[in-house]
Length: 464
Image 1 (tube, rainbow, N blue to C red):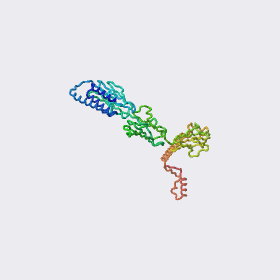
Image 2 (cartoon, rainbow, N blue to C red):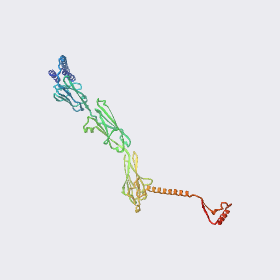
Image 3 (tube, rainbow, N blue to C red):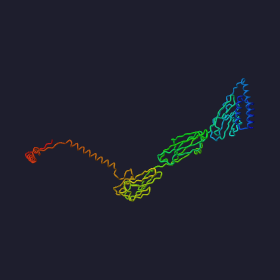
Image 4 (cartoon, helix red, strand yellow):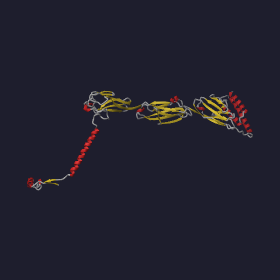
């Protein structure tokens, strides 16, 4: 009944107003679409539709009759403008139809199905979510509460001039995504292995964007894909995968899947749109042997206390040993501690702490050198650790250098002597053996030699 009275009243308004004929026809066409879309009785529908169709036919005939005598009237340009609207599902959208230089022409707002929502300040459409915010000669502003996806589309602002003007306001509805879920292909990972994470979120429009973080560090090594939701048209489901190679430093760090979407601005909502998994990384031990006391060099009679610090996952087991020799009977071993009392020279050697778990094993060594307590054996202040200088001992590099220099000097001396003897090499003859070469036997040679010596006035020597 309200619709019927509204239509009849506005038909009178149309015929009594100064609207151009084709503008009136335009209005009636909008009324007809509105009537056919209403949930009213069949009799009332047919009656209103029949009356409006008769009025429409009457206007068209009148328009044809006056078309030959119509005079052109110059008016100031009227500009009809509106704006597109982006709104989050469930919130309120406002459509504004604005006119510049209006000459009291009628403004009307139609929905995407071209049903009249508001004609001037009157709402013929039975949808209480539409409410009039402002009506004047220059603006028709309407709000739409509790917006849903079905409200999305192109709305029409109409200004009934000759010819009529139209402007379109597109309502875009954003649908925030659901809370994401995160899964991993491994719950426990060994150091150096890879683990794959999968993050999924559903029901967003447009498709959401998924970011990954390890701790506070954003990761880029991910792949994402999205597909339309099979249950709801226009909505999207998004899945992202991250492959991560882990180290011992990653153990206990959170891997966060964070969803970003233009419909989400509130900080609390942003926090709700994320999911986390904590890395559980197993790794072989790292070992370090430290000296609890003494703080300086180890001397005879001192007590040595060593501590083995091992870090691994699972928690490693520890074992002390002395390399190449048996552990002294005085040694007191208690898991990570090794204590040697009344040190002496026989305790010198390398002591090793070994740590092992299911992932692997490692060790650290301590090189012990015990100094005599005599004043002549005063050591330096350095700790006697493996891989470092042993206090008070002769540097092997220095000894090697000295030996090399001595060997080099001997070689040089031999070369000089060799060259000297080579230059003075020859044969040395004397007359003492004169005649011995011609003797028939040994006795004769001796006689000849003696005779030669006696008969000789003087002994002469020749060097050739």
